[in-house]
Length: 313
Image 1 (cartoon, rainbow, N blue to C red):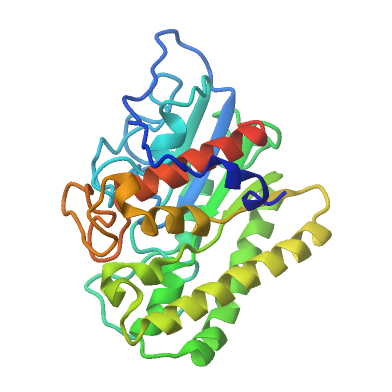
Image 2 (image 1 turned 60 degrees about the vertical axis):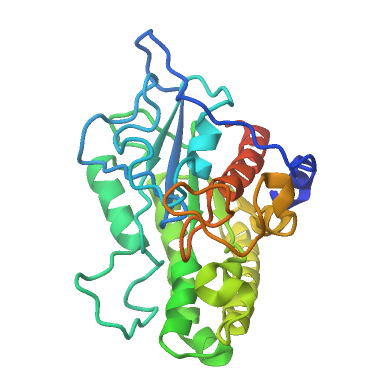
């Protein structure tokens, strides 16, 4: 099932953005009935740490991290939106996303020396297996039926190629092993008992301020690598379904929702699509040099919420 095939109708044609509001809280003490396990980078992170308290619960579905905490939108991110204003009683979220993470920090071959080594999807999975464990041995109650694993990677993988001075062709050669490992991780998750997956494609982040809103000399390579990366994910997803026929793997494409906002800034209260609002994340559509602001995150979050409901979550 491909999200983009049935989410198009939820584009906010009126341009209105509903305030996400406060986290829905229940006073009774109950065990979670559904689990969302989310992995990704700064476009997804809510600052949650599986080693800290409080852990996700029915009364506090996102657990620790605070609000807005370390979110890179200035306010609501798409994860906040799917858990606010859209009643999901009994659902909890374990969001392992970490700012700056690619799929595989070694395979993407960064050339810039960083003050601390960057982590990656495999590090997030190590945190998951250490703290939570497989469907057959975990203590929180997740299983193949009541859980959904969502992965949103590729932004850093692509941007690292351009930052390293690689063009579309040389970047593709570096990213091929990275993509192989991406789907190897899904295979590892399957062995842990995961059966329901959602893969989010790379959005059109070549339109971000860091690339002069799509007009820099490097923007075409970012755009081309993004299109290529997404096509690889879709083709490899088809192969994954064939290899694991019991897996239910869906693809969510954020591109139409990003473009709907960026192409119609006035509808979303922005003066144009070429400004940023730091630290508020609004009224401009970009929060900072690389991250979408609140309007984009909410629009995509509302689309994701509709899609997840169609999957039973």
